[in-house]
Length: 214
Image (cartoon, rainbow, N blue to C red):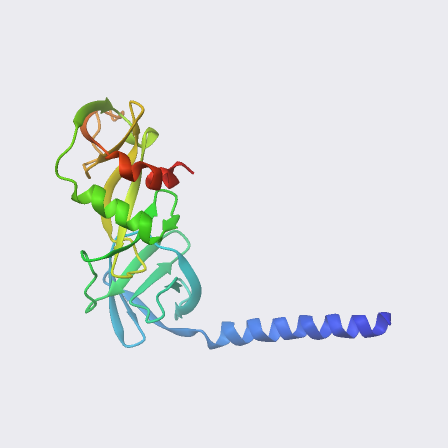
């Protein structure tokens, strides 16, 4: 009985090793990173900023300095992420038109969680399109203490390429804050207090966006 169990265990272990080695040696090693561009599988990729989730490794450069990872929910590899020992770069196919508007289908939040429910996306769309409503100014040197950044995915794009600003609680009220320069510093290099405009979110959407409290 023990001998049989041992043989089964060894068979499983050998299978795992063979699969791993097969993947390792069959990985596409034709990727080339040169002059800020990535050349991979007969396509040219250029850098782009955005939020995303990586998937499996699908290629490497010949010198093994860079590995190319797929992006989740992107079977056509319109986007890829290249990783080296010290760098990580998101790339998009040079001829791919990244959707910047249309139907909102996903929202990445600060910590790279993505929310894709129709109800949440519809609420965010309404908040972004809200042109009127109560506003107030707020002074802070760290908006991240009060609100989360949101990145928007349109038309089922797997990457949040559009920075949507911030949503959070300021003065005990749910507010939306349009994108602004968060890198401004005082002369001594310390964070500088700035005044930002907060737009109070309409009550009907608050129950839905409370998902951002996690």
